Image (cartoon, rainbow, N blue to C red; front, side, top):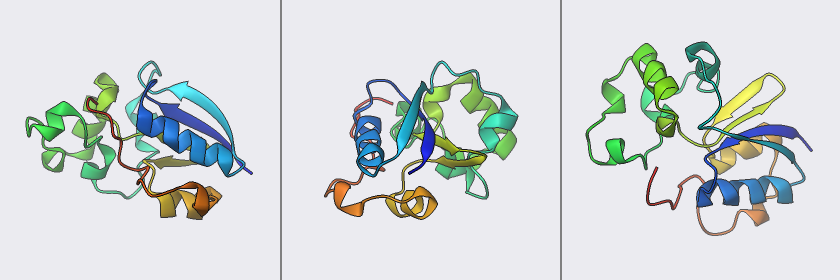
Amino acid sequence: MAKVIFWEKPGCKGNSRQKEILEASGHQLDVRDLLTEVWTVEELSRFFGARAVVEWFNPTNPRIKSGDLDPAALTPEAALTMMVEEPLLIVRPLMQMGRQRLAGFNVQEVHNWIGLKLDEVGERDPQNCPCVTS
């Protein structure tokens, strides 16, 4: 069992399902609001590791879906600055256990990180938020 800080967008159905999976797997959650957290570029950067910048972004954000914003064209510094100013751009959830951090909810990655009861995941991919808006 892990104690995980879980930053979510309140009311997001995808985040609700992710929390259910984590709790059913025996993990304790300290749930926080991704949108009201006071992020810094330095703090936010710790969640993304060596991932490509495009993976840092919420693919359901209207600006990204419309093509108005192309994350692949951004430098890491520009991307982080944008996300600090507009947290709805950040891929969800952000999670932290101790000093370890993770962005997004790739089932295999989360399972390798803290362990999941994979039978609790079900058919629908919890990485992809069913939300209509970001």
